[in-house]
Amino acid sequence: MDQQPVRKDFYIYLGIFLLLLLVTILIPFLQVVTLFLLPIPVILLMKNYPIKWAIVGILILLSFSLFVVPVFSFPITLLALLSGVLIGWSIKQEQHPYETWAKGTAGFVLGLTLIYAYIEVVLQFSIMDAFESAMDDSLQMTEDLFQAIGMGQQDFDLIREELMNMLQLMPVILVVVSMAFAIVTQWVCYKVINKVQQESYYFPPFRSFNLPKIFLWIYFFMLLISFLVMGDYSSMASVIIWNVYHLTGILMALQGLAFVFFYSHVKKQSLALPVISILFIIFFPFMGLYLIRILGIIDLGFELRKRMAK
Image (tube, rainbow, N blue to C red; front, side):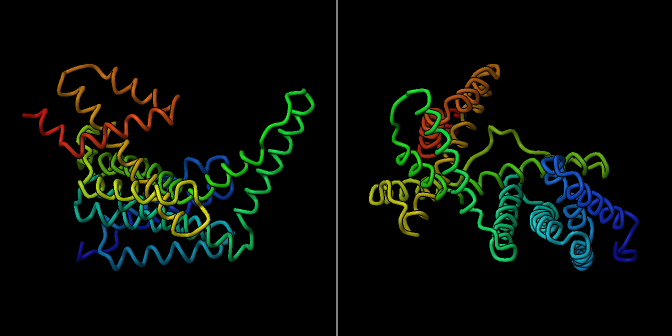
């Protein structure tokens, strides 16, 4: 590698990225797929080449994005580069897959945040105002429909307030979306590396997913503070508190779901219980997440897996 720093695959990675970028811009309905795939060439650059050559490749990709429909290609390229660099660097350092997932999530969060700022500042388009306007139009149409069919007066102001409160939880939604993007991208990249380079990268079984105990204390701390700002989204501090509380709650739910998989494995049962748990969360999200979160708290706090292993 040191004697011949740039090989043919260096240009192949750049070409694949540029091809995926063009497909993303020219064929919008494929964006759902290509946004998962775009970081993979960057990951391979970071993994297989010294940092200086990875930087050269990144600069080439950024330069190209400024010449091909930059209003769309630049933010998409930025998102792919940030997530790809963090995932690729973590793989290069042979870090644990879940740690790589966390870094990939951070990359997607940062990229999506910069895209949001780009839309708001550079394009002068307010996403929040557009959402609020669409919500008002939808509520007005619903109210007119209710009145037309004689269903009586409904408290749409209360519904609107609840929807606006949900909008304040956009950071949590952003993190959850980034987690989904990161894990799919990382999983596909593992498959590509294993196939092309004959290596053995894989995610450990989900039943081994286990949060550091510090997350439990953060959750309880946010839970206690949330009682002081119950239903209040008027200040920046309260919005931050609610977002951190809901995010740690989602992580506790993942902990609980991992325990369900662990329990089925230890008891040598089929996957019926984990599958039923997932379906229950999907069809009854509020109750399902609440119950599985409690299980995650008990598992993390009392170390149920260690006790069952003994």
